[in-house]
Amino acid sequence: MGLFTKDIKTMDDLFVHQLQDIYYAEQQLTKALPKMADKATDPQLKQGFLTHLEETKQHVKRLEEVFKMHGTQVKAVDCPAIDGIIEEAEETAGEVADKAVLDAALINAAQAAEHYEIVRYGSLIAWAKQLGRTDCAAVLAKTLEEEKATDKKLTTLAESKVNLRAAS
Image 1 (cartoon, rainbow, N blue to C red):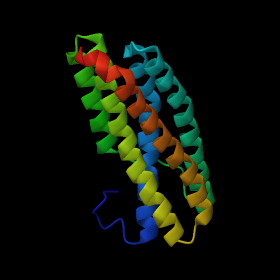
Image 2: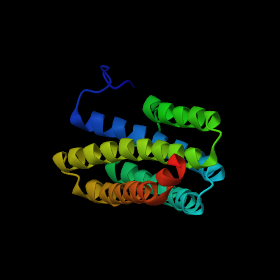
Image 3: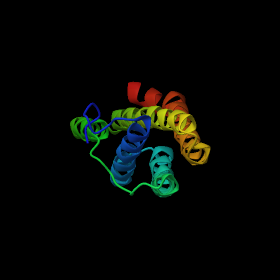
Image 4: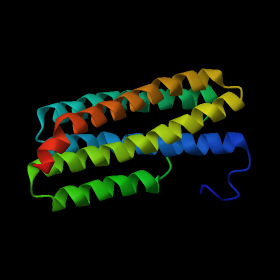
């Protein structure tokens, strides 16, 4: 089912499609985060990736809960956006020789993924409410708050030391 195809006829169809999209994205991030943690040299960054990995596993479970609450089959659809973000992160990480600069690049890549997720969850929450599914919106809101908190932690880490170390 493509985003702009005849398969999406209603707001409910759009909601389910984006649920499937973010479900795929979260699954891909559970594979990418351990690799990012392995590449990170800053101990706080490394631990941050591992902590967010555990949160991301919970995000997957919450999405499965929302699928069930909504009476929809748990299913993922390919998400070219997250695939591109992860691919770009891997390419950039492979090109950076300086470990301090690599940590800054990893934060940037992680924030690209976080911002994508924040947009998706924000829309899903709004659509769930519009569809009268405040129960689904409440579950999705928990994840949105965690994604925003992770983004804020990454910004703080970047601005307080990682970017400074990379620039020197």
